[in-house]
Amino acid sequence: MHSGGEPPIQLVIFDLMGTLVIDTGIVDEAYRVALKSVGDRGGEADMAAVSTLRGRPTLDVLTAVLADPVAAEEATWAFDDHVLDGVPTMEPSPGASETLAALDDRAIACAVTSSFSPEVRKAVIGAHGWGERFAAELSAHGRRRGHPAPDLLLEAMLELRVDSVGQVAIVGDHAADLVAGNRAGAGVVVGIGRRAELHDAPHTHLIDRLDELIEIIDRPRTIGHRRSSDIDAP
Picture 1 (cartoon, rainbow, N blue to C red):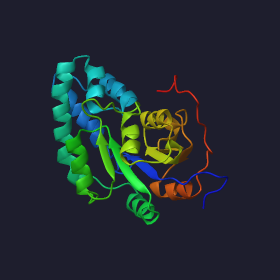
Picture 2: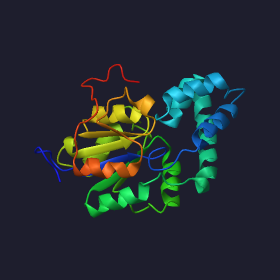
Picture 3: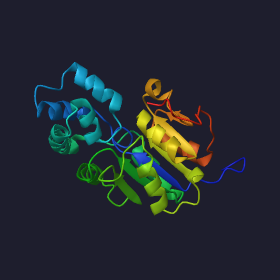
């Protein structure tokens, strides 16, 4: 039940890896493989830089670390190949299937955004039998900027014709996801896991499991801190 005159949530937009799907380290390993593919890279300093940029599009991360757009594009292919090889080993996050089913029961639309390429995104979603589950699936690609820019979220809102950005919830596991949600004006901005990292990012809620989301959706409340400006956000 909704209280306090709050409008019901019409759309939930999920990040993919680390949110709907468990990240068991395959992404970090893919970055190491990608960096090594273009030279003697992928050491501690490089991976520390990658860690601060996680949640952004793969090409953006590799371009920032390598400072060479040509090498970064080549490395991105190696990244994608490694992740695609690991798709059969990936598992859904605890509570993911139950949460998607509960949202479906409530006639709430679901969308997914990803910093991965469209090919990787489709492979991961297909491997979990979610091919028909999402009303919209978007990747940072071409003119679409990835998180922390709000492009993907706003495009999903426009495509699915929500009545108000305040009736949208976004869920992600990186600060960039929450910054994007804040910039898009989403009414509910939920961080999952990584509490120490996400505490200082703009959010309305922090959760440990996806199935905690349903109570938030049924009674959305701003119980966390939410900055009106994210100029200093990571």
